[in-house]
Image 1: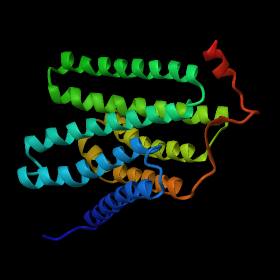
Image 2 (image 1 turned 90 degrees about the vertical axis):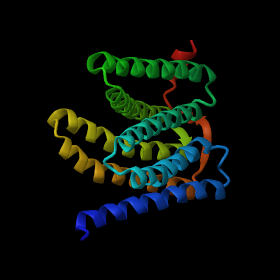
Image 3 (image 1 turned 30 degrees about the vertical axis):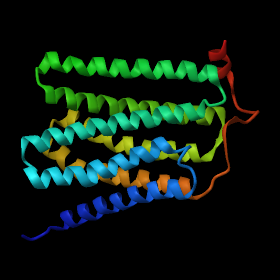
Image 4 (image 1 turned 135 degrees about the vertical axis):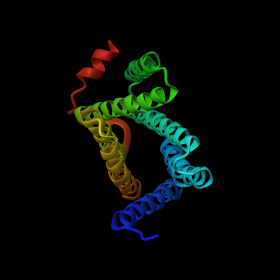
Length: 245
């Protein structure tokens, strides 16, 4: 069976992604930052184990067109979305590490947002009466929510001028990843073209993941001047004071 140029490119992106996922985990350990970046390390490890090992194994054993692989694929996609949400929660906690009242407000907000996403996604059960629709919509809604939360976090870091270069780069990398996922889902709703979505997902999502991992490796390896949770005096702390009151 001949291999097309698109397949060669896809394999190159996939295996480069797997290599960078391993590299991120190793870099976190070698840099002595496992305690600070434990959540990120576990998230990347799950990406490698589920996407790089488990999915191909299930596909080869049961067939890529089997119903079991279909459900396994989307269930693992939900795991990735949940993992990304937890990583962002960890980023918020790190950004608010010296502002306890601010973190108390943010954590309740994050719990509320998650419950809203879960509730809105559960409506698909009444509309479609199909379990797979709930899985797809919950994953989709959570990715969009993570994109919004990550953007809010980036704005917060700029507003407070937090002296944590590493965290800023990690947040930027996560934003690149969510941008690809959001673009795929948006095109699905706009066009309703499953073939177009499948083609874009094959290249766009892995490429965005590759870019995210590259940024994370740079953030971990550059040894930035990090003062976690410390705000510059000239920063606008009005929001912190408002929450504290």
